[in-house]
Amino acid sequence: MMRRKFASYRRPVSAVLPLVRGQLHNIAVGHSAHVSKAGYIAAAPYPRMGECTAVWLSWRDDVQLMALDGMEPNYRRIQLDGEACPLLVDHGERPEEFSLFTSRWGVLTDGDGGKLHFLDRPALFGLLAGSGNGDLLEEGKPVFDGPPDLVAEQLAIPSVQA
Image (cartoon, rainbow, N blue to C red; front, side, top):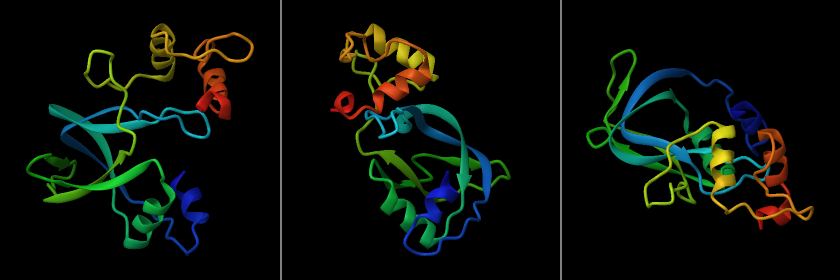
């Protein structure tokens, strides 16, 4: 997906994306509080003291970062402090600071004011269907009714997104 985004950028962007595993502390993963044009509800990080999240880290050059900053309208890059949010790279390094992309829309809540932890698509759509918040489609069916691929297709309909 990154290579495709980089290929469509207005300047040449390196397709080299080194990745390593790590553990990020005091950050959890939930669901962005928006629906993409393709009908997906993406994962998004949020602060949560005591949480430890397995992550993939990538080292990007300045042009790659500029491309991502310009092509991700629903996300913003923030700097994190390695003391407040310790990051342990699998090979032992602990960066003093690093970037993280967060949702401009925030994350979904659990209905009681807490953040909703990340769920797989069937579980998320089932939860949303049971919340009573799924507006009806023109055919009179709830948006979140059906298999995940159908729900994503329905969420891509501009009138549903509106």
